[in-house]
Image 1 (cartoon, rainbow, N blue to C red):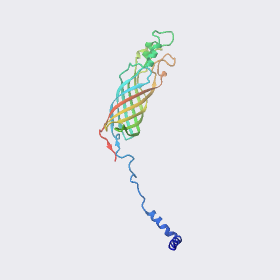
Image 2 (cartoon, rainbow, N blue to C red):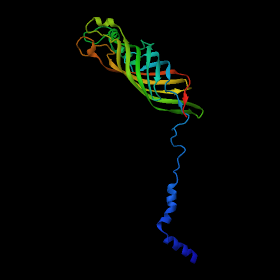
Image 3 (tube, helix red, strand yellow):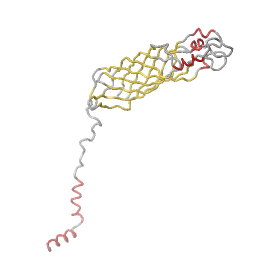
Image 4 (tube, rainbow, N blue to C red):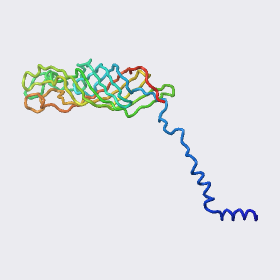
Length: 265
């Protein structure tokens, strides 16, 4: 007991410098560095896009058109400037120019077949003024903020990405221009028209060089789908145009070149 008491008293009487030595020694030790420091967020990541060309055929369908549906065959091409940015374009040619919408059929059901005393058009006059899509073209910049990998039932694995795009869009409308010969008659709005093209899309990459691409777009432009005199000035012209959305959904099967991709560290 006397020895223990002497030790306690000696420690209490020790200078502060002596008690600080272990603390100072610990402070001089080098800090530990995590083995994951400066490491990439994802290792062995498939770099599927940067400096690669995407090209392939596809099918496009309009959604919610006024008088005529358009089912188009076409294709898409894009060049990826980086993993998150691409420039590209699409084209579509209408295979079903005479596919009437249900709204078109309802309009036909209420219009007269013979001309009356009022401004109500006959079925023939109304159809003569309606325009329909012949071809569609678009140029777009694509921004890819999300990409990754998914699995189905733990057996099938595939890479994916989501992107938004925008740029100019072009629609070539066709119709019966002979309807414009009589004042007050329908006059279809035809020819190549330009507007704004924007939407969203996604890829599913089955392999390094083959993907399925789905896009939903709107080409917004000034149009007069019915070709009728909307202002009451007895002439169907540019004064009767309004902003009109042309919604479309497309699916493409695209190839990527070169056919092999890089893998990150």
